[in-house]
Length: 258
Image (cartoon, rainbow, N blue to C red; front, side):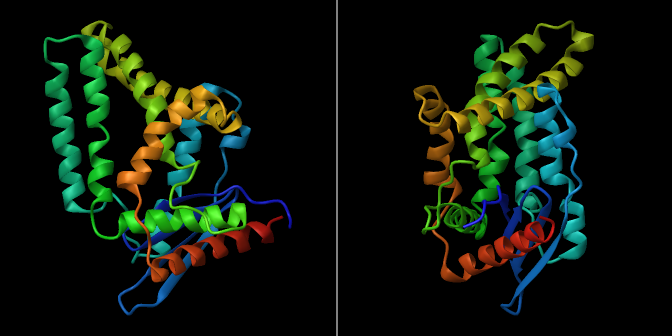
């Protein structure tokens, strides 16, 4: 077997997106029951970034930057945050978080609560329709390709594993930002958020390199439990077929550029 391509992915309401180092592909089940696929090349920035402070945010931006192109190529794709319910949860969460920050309680407790509330939109989107099933299909398809046997619906590189590091780093950063003078506080919170993404991405990379470390396992535990209990569900054969179609289309493009 040749060297495996390192892949990531995203579950949609009616399909799966798979992306590799240079390409992306998306497959969805459309109204007449057929599978429709679109694919393309990624615009790469992160390989040229050496600063740890910038590398993580740029990688996150890259993983989302081609979504407008995806929607143009595959308008049937239902992205996770497109529903009215999820938009409403985002607005409600922002209001509650603002109220929590005005409470006269310990700053670290306040920021920890705000960080936990920030998970609400993602959890709300996962409880809609077949998104959790397609999330499981995404993991099974990519994991089976990587390990050459039927994989579980939980995957060790799922973005949910960023939750542990993000909660810790984000809480600390926002506590520090909250002590800035009032006129600089909003800018300080933005800087803290960018810093939390950067630091969490680097911690996540360390967790992948030291997967057997007790600390790495502890940091990965919240994400694994979220995947196992909430974020993924066992897919049907038809849903797994969609994920495998996205996987193959992405690999075809990656191998064509090799």
